[in-house]
Length: 238
Image 1: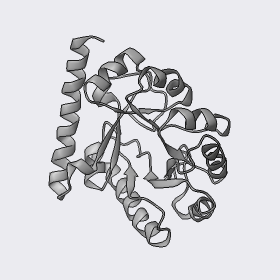
Image 2 (image 1 turned 120 degrees about the vertical axis):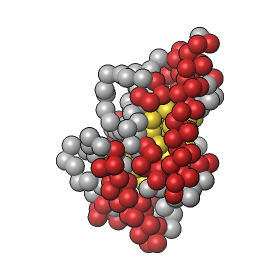
Image 3 (image 1 turned 90 degrees about the vertical axis):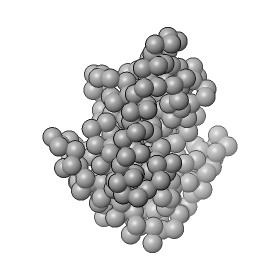
Image 4 (image 1 turned 45 degrees about the vertical axis):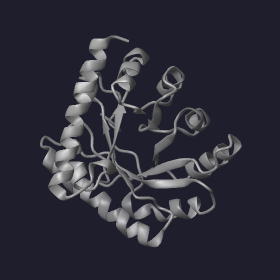
């Protein structure tokens, strides 16, 4: 671990937290209600050790296999899966990650519940991924197709922490705002019908996390603003 890298990452963390704090103040929110997940895709385990030393203890990975490779080297971190989950990767994902933010099909729910019970964690926390914009290039439930997911969840002991979405690729961060507002409004309506739905809203990345916070994000997934530019391998966090 290089001291200069720790210092640089600490400085980047302070800058991001400062923007989160400012966004919260603009809308009268408590910044302690927003969790910063540092998206670690393509970042080495050595650099992630520096990130943890700099205070970035919530780490996100887009790919299960990357998390499996890195997590044993960072036992003090909390790991979020923020990329797609294939059915054949459920067991390693549950063993490696502390929370899965990307449950995007009804079929995954009983499989996650069964394996979570087998590993002794029946109340494993998940978020449901919603394709708010109905973008055919994105994964997630369409907003009006979530009822079967909640019906499936009622048969399990899983903890449904909330909803997650991937914002639209836009030139101006302000143009992503309506996606975030729509997820917040959707969550309010769903919670009235499905009390097990938790309050978390995971939305916002490096280009638009301030706007997401203003619209109610409780989790922001930030990569580039912390670690610098990298080769893209997906857009669930960045």
